[in-house]
Length: 76
Image 1 (cartoon, rainbow, N blue to C red):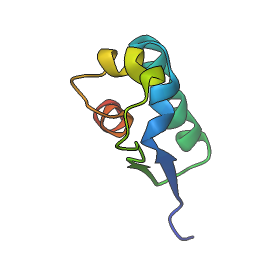
Image 2 (cartoon, rainbow, N blue to C red; image 1 turned 45 degrees about the horizontal axis):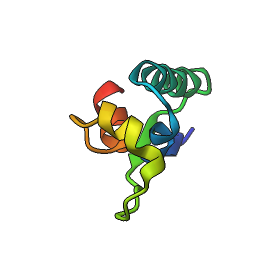
Image 3 (tube, helix red, strand yellow; image 1 turned 135 degrees about the vertical axis):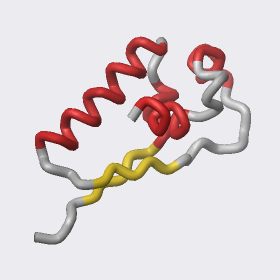
Image 4 (cartoon, rainbow, N blue to C red; image 1 turned 60 degrees about the vertical axis):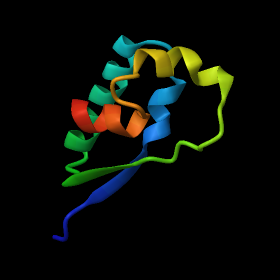
């Protein structure tokens, strides 16, 4: 059987209001990948370069990672 891959946008984390919930979401993605026997989860950075004030709260919490994609990569 060929390997199964999936792609997740990094911006999914930027919609979450706290680091604890973002970490939980990363865990749920990993759990779903395990249940469905996904061999590889690829995370792409689709954050636009324009400034969006609605994501300031989350970006302040994720400053050390820079983007949602980096957050998923380091927590995966």
